Each structure stands twice: as C-alpha cells, then as structure tokens.
Amino acid sequence: MHPAKTADPVADTDGSKPEQTALSNRNSGFLFAHLSDLHLSDPSGVRSRDLLNKRLLGYLSWRRHRREEHSGEVVDALVRDLKRADPGHIVITGDLTHLGLPEEFREVSKWLSELGPPGRITVIPGNHETYVDTPWDDTMARWLPYMTSDTPPESGTGITADTVFPSLRIRDGIAFLGVSSARPSAPFLAVGSLGPAQLEALDRLLLETGQMNLYRVLLIHHPPLKETLGWRKRLVDAKRLRDVLRCRGVELVLHGHAHRPADGRLKTRDGISPVIGVPSGSAIGLKPGRRASYNLCRVTRTGKDWELTVESRGYSPESGEFVPENQGSVSAPDHKGGEQQNQGNGPQGCNQGIQIQHQSQVGD
Ligand SMILES: [Fe+2]
Image (cartoon, rainbow, N blue to C red; front, side, top):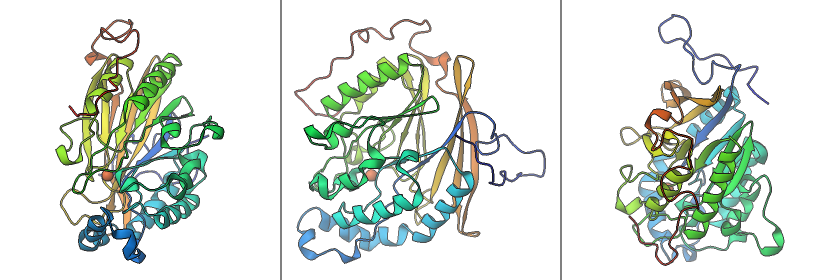
C-alpha cells in the first residue's frame, strides 16, 4: 500500500551520501504521519449568544494570540509536504478547532475531505473540541468517518464518544488505538480524562492486539507523562492510563496538547516505549520552540522486534515549506528496559486485567 513513488528524496545535509530517514528508506516498513493541534477553523463569525459561557475566554484568547499564531499559509505548506511524503496513513491527535462550535466542525470536515479519505486519516478529539458541552450530532458526529474503528459500533445503541472510543484501526501490522481525553473543563483549565469505562476497554484492546503481535500505537490528545505539562493542562487519570500501559504493553504513544515537541519514555512490561508529542502543525512560532512541525514515523519489523524511525519536519518561514529538522531510529519498545525480561504475563497484578476504580476521577 506504500511507499510513495513520486516524492523527491530528503536532501543531504553536507553533500555526502544520503542519510537513512523516514522518507528515504522507502522499501521497508510502514510510513505514517503524526500531526496535532492544527486549530484550523476561523471563529471570527461567532454569534455573541454562543459566547455566554467558557467560549468567551477562548474567543478572547483567539483574538489576542491564536489568530496570529495559527496560519492558513502554514497549513497549506503542511498539506503540500504531506502530498510529497505520501504516507500510508495520517494520524491527527486533536484540537482541530478553537471553540468547538458546530460551524468549526463543518469547516474542519471540509478540510479533512480535501486532505484524504477517512480510511487513510485517523482523528481523535482534543479539549478544544469539547470547550463546552455541545450535542454530539452538531459536532464530532461530523468527523465520525475519520474517528470510528474499522468495525464501527452498532448505530442502534446510539453513537457517542463513549461508544466510538477507544477506536481501533489496523494498517499493515500497525494497530492505531485512539482514545478521547476530551472533556469540558472549568474556565482556565484544559484538563482531560479517559474515565473508567474507556480505560477498561483500552485494557482489553491492548491485550487482544498484543496477542495478535501488532505494533500498538496509542493516540491521545493529553500527554500521559506528568512531567510534560503542568497541573492546569494535565490528564486527570494519567496514572491509571500508565498502569494499563505498563501491564499490557504499548509500542508507541503519540500525543499533542503541549504545542511543543516532547520525547518521553514509558517503562512497560515489554520494555521502554517512546512517548512522542508534536507541536501545532499550523503555528508560526511566536513563542520560541513552538513553530509548526510534524513527524513522519516509519515502523519496520526486524525479526521478532520492531524499529521505529522518526523524522521531524518543521516549517521554514524562509522557504515557506516544511523541511527536515532531525531524525532518529530506536527499537520500540527497547526490551533492555522492560519490567520483566521473560515472556511472562507482565508485572504482578496484570494477569487478570488491571483493577480500575469507578468511584473517583481524582488525578494522580
Ligand atoms: Fe489541547
């Protein structure tokens, strides 16, 4: 199903022989792109009655900062770069809107349909999609073809975020597991949570896809590592998510929300797994370190193990295009750092599935 046939190879940095990058190593593995926090929509036409809630704060923030920071020209350059790279799949880890207005969902739907078919693009929501509680049918239902599993939930029971997530899409031995941490939160907070039901379903899916020897990629908007962001923007049940991931294993975690790059590690039953965040894909970069970039990830099976090559491509104001920034390869997961080196059932307490408390949503 891949790789691309027409894109130019990545340029040499010093005139010597080409480096092996996610783009240049075209004959092996599966290439996919990770984008996040595009904030594509234009809420300038919002009606004043739609601002009689937390959206007023978001609208003022957009007027003061985000309107300048998120650029249509950068998004257009991003799309051009994606067309050249021609990844087999694109994952977008949330925050495509500013205020989560129904009109913004329509606007983003049109952009998605121009970017590619739903089978090649996986979307999960971010906190801006649920700025306030808004009916599903007016908002995220419009993105359903891009969010739902390969085997969608039965419509008879009523499709909502609770039935759509966790989602599962399998492409060339890669299991993309999407979760929704998007929940309305109080003014001045941008926290998220998964909730016990979604964590239990994720626990089962990780177990099943692990038994199928798939390369499991968890897609989540909020970073699961507590050092990535402060209390105001945290994932409230991050510790419980990390418990699930430690018990069941996960080969790679991808997130957004921080608007800057993040390169973390999580110890699981199988080894040390990368936890990678990308900045906004549309940012001019008014603050240092926040200019737009995205990652091209190539996953290659090497015997019983996997190799992950990640190439970051960032926006260059000089050329008006995205250019290679850096790249590296790791065994993912790295088995040298696992909690157990044998092929057992993982850390103590994992054999029967983890115990997820239903009573409380208090964070760690
Ligand atoms: Fe966010």
